[in-house]
Image 1 (spheres, rainbow, N blue to C red):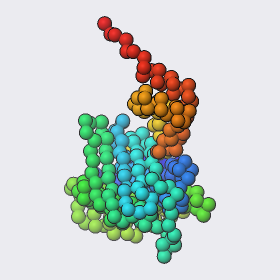
Image 2: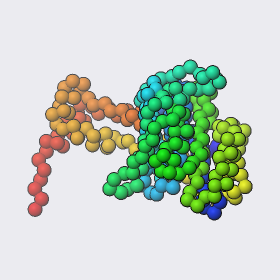
Image 3: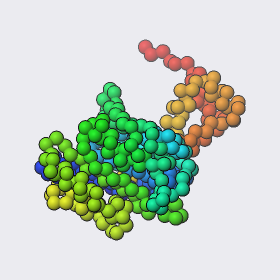
Amino acid sequence: MRDTILQATAADGTIRASVVISTHAVEDARIRHVTSATATAALGRSLTAAALLSAGLKENQSVMLRVLGDGPIGGVIAQADAEGHVRGYAMHPQADLPHTDGRKLDVGGLVGRRGMLHVTRDLGLRTPYHGSARLVSGEIAEDLASYFITSEQIPSVVALGVLVAPNLSVLAAGGLCIQALPGARPEIVDALEARARRLLPITQMMSTGRTIEEILAESLGDLHPHIGTTTPLAFYCRCSRERVEGVLLMLGAQELEALVAQEGRAEVTCRFCGDRYVLSDDEVRGLIGKLEDPVPDVM
């Protein structure tokens, strides 16, 4: 199944829903960051949550999710934009824990149950919008639902899932978010919450062959959803050699001279995607030359 973000409305526009299929993006992240099984689930849920948060963004807008708990993983950061690009990393990607008594990956234990969830939306304004809420379980779905009601006053049902194979590859990953907007009738909200409790896990629905549209229909029942925008989803990072050179130039000539003297080169690894950039001695000295060149007068 292709990675996709599907948006919809229902109940005369008073219910907003998004479904995300993110299997390939999460597998890409797993390979890049060499994550443990539980860290794969934590990072995958966070990437999927960021994709859900990105639904409805406009061109050049983005959202960042930071899940900062007191567990061994240290924290998980994920970012998504309006074009369906997601990227992210775990601070300690190899951290892991034994399975729970129910033989499930202990994501809550790995993330930690004390800490904060932060959401930052860059909408192209002078100041990004920032909201936060305390973690309630570390399982990320419950924490995001708590964030919506605490910080944005939007009652929401959130489901996130990552199915990891014994060989650590990602078999399925996806998420669902249903939100009650102003004007939603209480009985509809109650019915959606009751329905959500009866739903199969989203990865189980995916594994049985349900399409993204069928998952949406099953989640909303007889509310006659109106299908909106469909956006392809992929792991994509904006890092580049040019950006790395820009960062190095900000260090200044003295710092770059010291770096060349000690290392004989400059090496930068992007935390979001794991790509590694190496600049040779001559290339770093070329940057130093740019800093030392006098700025010509402009008449």
